[in-house]
Amino acid sequence: MSLGLRLTLLNGLVLLLVIGAFAAVAYVTQVQALRSSLDDSLRAQARRVGERGAFWLDHPVGPPRGVAFPSPERFAAPDVFIQVVSRDGTIQSRSPSLGDDSLPVDPAMLQRALAGEEWFADVAVDQQPLRLFVMPLRAGRSSETGALIGMVEVARPLGPLYGSLRTLQATFLAVGGAGVLVSVVVGWLLSRAALRPIDALADVAQEIGAARDFSRRVPVRPGARRDEVGRLAEEFNRMLAQLQAAYEQLEAMLAAQRRFVADASHELRTPVTVVRGNLDLLRSMLPIRTVADAEEQAQLLADMAGETERMGRLVSDLLLLAQADAGQHLVLSPLELGSVVRDAFRAARFLREDVELRLGEVVDETWVRGDADRLRQLLLNLLDNALKYTPPGGVVSLSARRLARAEVDGVAVTVADTGPGIPPAEQARIFERFYRTDPARTAGGAGLGLAIARWIVDEHQGAIDVESAPGRGSRFTVWLPTQAGPPDRVDGRRHEEASRLAPAT
Image 1 (cartoon, helix red, strand yellow):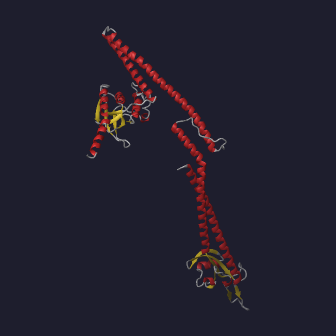
Image 2: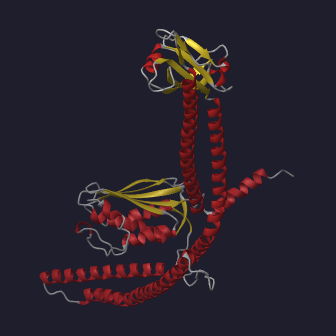
Image 3: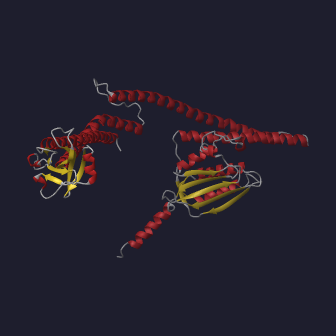
């Protein structure tokens, strides 16, 4: 989800919450105001009826003969229902608007009224919701000191109130929805306009990263306002300048390192060759005086020859890595991988006599595009490491099997040993140059074998994986993509298919 869309949705959500809160407060306030106004009108109507309608019927001599209850006809309106009830619960009079209906009367209501209490209630008459006000009815002109003779009920329909509230709800929904929709559209347009310079900056950054052209700069218009986007562009250009300087410095250092390694390798090959030849000549020319002298002399010469061989391998490895750093690539051609695997096995059989080297399953007629010498070097490096770090009596196995990877046909060559294993924390670094693990796995070597192996695998568009655990040995697997066969065989098969499918003449 883009930043502009997130900002737009966030703005719409905030506006929706604000409008919703405002509508809720306004709705509750309006409901309370309408109900309060309705209640005030019911109370005023009931008091007018009570204060003007009830009086005693006096007798010239003795107590009064009775009470004259008010008639609600002159107080009632079409939407106002009035009912007068005596102490015994008898309905004395009703407003014409009630017709044949009557407002609810029950002993509990009458008791509350005769106790001098007045209250509001929502009732229903003939399935019509009403707002009802009940007030005690007193005889005489005083509504506070007169004798309680019954109660007055005044009611009005709640339909108009509910209709007004529904209209208010619809208005809030329509206005709020339209407001949110307009805000989202306008917010989207504004966000796109505001983020367009950032999009342009991102495009330029992507182009610079893809081309690695750190000399390029983000265009900044002269006289542009120093807003956030302008300052971001200036800081980005400043960062690009620093990156360019660092990149140029690093390139210069790497170029100098590559020249040094290449020159040192070339310079060292000659003296190493000379020393090796002189040692061979010295071994053949020195006279042998006694058996002890001969044994000591032979041991010294053997040690010197071994170290010279080791130095020669190191120089060759450094030269190979220098060529890789210089961008040189291997020349690949179709080859049958099974023969390369068997050649590597035969060459490694005599590296250790106290470790068993086994040749497992090796698929035949498995063709890859590769360099036979480098693939043989790759397998010998892996076999040499496995034999070197496997204790006496251990087993090292070599096998090759077909294995598809990411829906690509290929072959997996596996070298497994029963050595001490590699800790998980160090498995990611064993392919680095000159990296060595603990002393248990550093016998001989300079830490370049696996780095060279990885470069050879990369040159063949393959992959190399390691599976290992302390005390359980290690398993290195080299995967290489395969092809149908050598070019002449593929072309011949295509020619046969074309001849078979061609129409007869």
